[in-house]
Picture 1 (tube, rainbow, N blue to C red):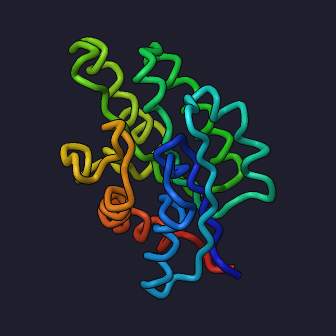
Picture 2 (cartoon, one colour):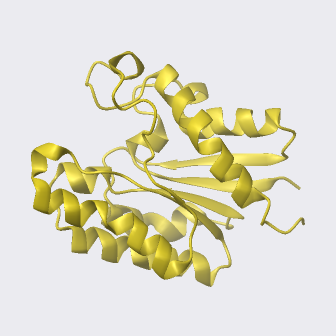
Length: 187
């Protein structure tokens, strides 16, 4: 039986403006299968979602459950200037609910735009390392690592990854996903 991975996030996970086969979950599944892993990666991304929105839909998105969740939420919170304490509280509750179901979690971090000011950026950027420490989670520090500064890897909106950008994200996060999969008991 394949290991079930839920990619739970926002438009960065959902594959905003991309065909399904080019979205993060599909590209990740293909890469993991290419390594010989028997996995199914489910697209649990909803464009525009905040951490609070993710919390509201967590239970129905999980459905029958998952072995692993890649938790990628917070970018929309940051773009809307939501108080980092609200984002952290929602992400904490998501993590607690997943842990209660014995689901392994890879926390995918986000970084605040410098345009929001140093105080906001410092408080926002601290969310992910703090959660990883509190809940003893593996942390992938920045979901957009490797593509965020390269305009050739973004859609015309300048924010979302294009197909090449998604491939870069997957290439960078793959070792972290692989390490977490090694801790999942075989069915």
